[in-house]
Length: 380
Image (cartoon, rainbow, N blue to C red; front, side):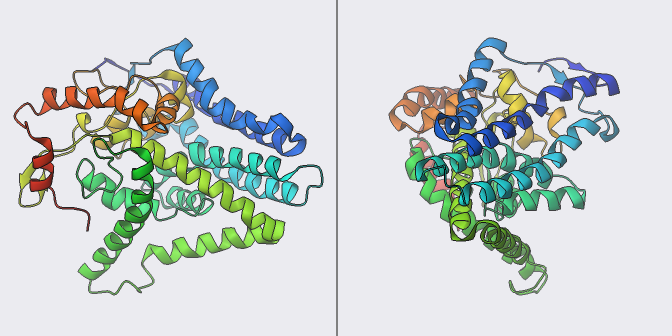
């Protein structure tokens, strides 16, 4: 692993600034909503292609901060994720109000604006909710719930914390993409299985306390209430058209989340130890990427190996790993997500890497199909 460097208050302030680049995407969306035309392609164009180009120019960042840095030195990083919540809220409902009653934008332009809104609420909003949901602070967790309610995917919190982190790299984790499973098969499967597994995980927790799933402590009641509030607000500011536009951005955001989920663990499997037990999660059970610009945009989400190894670490303290410690993606998430949309291209790029990973970490397992069928129970 690369050497660590101290993160003083001054250096923390300076190093936090690039992560605030996501806020520059918001004016682009307002420009698209006001002017329409080709401006509507600007938000996804910048989010996907500009940062992919910046990755090529700026290269990799293999420096690691001191993982023992106290929270008191991370103020500007915490403010980043917290500040995004009101910004996204005002932008989403402000643009719904502006666009739903617009006489100058045609239907395709309105769709384009909210496709771009979905790129923001998915690429940035859900990603920031992911950071917030992992914190012990109740305010931050509530802010994460608000972000997820804006895209009608509130159960992601339960699925991620109770299912994904526990079962990652096994067929009991719906979000772990199987070897040779194309994204277009993965996506409909994960939409249903992640909801079902998250609800069951919460129901099982209540059952261990001798409570029914209808107990009001079940977070799904909070999820449904928050989502109903968001839909009600969309109707209140934009009528039926406002609800439709809201649903467009939510659908795009969910797709953005799940394509990244697909990339993060494709083909990787934890060793089964028998009796339903698996080896502990290690850095080599997630794909890692050190591409500098995309890690700015996604607040180090590409340091995913360390996130699963140490889930409690805040994003500025996540460590990167060299190829001997964790498998490396050949490109950053934007390019890998585009490759995932074309399964033959994806398999050509990633299947040899999965096979090399198997030989490196599990040379004793020679029949992977039989191994997976025999030792891993299917999702419940």
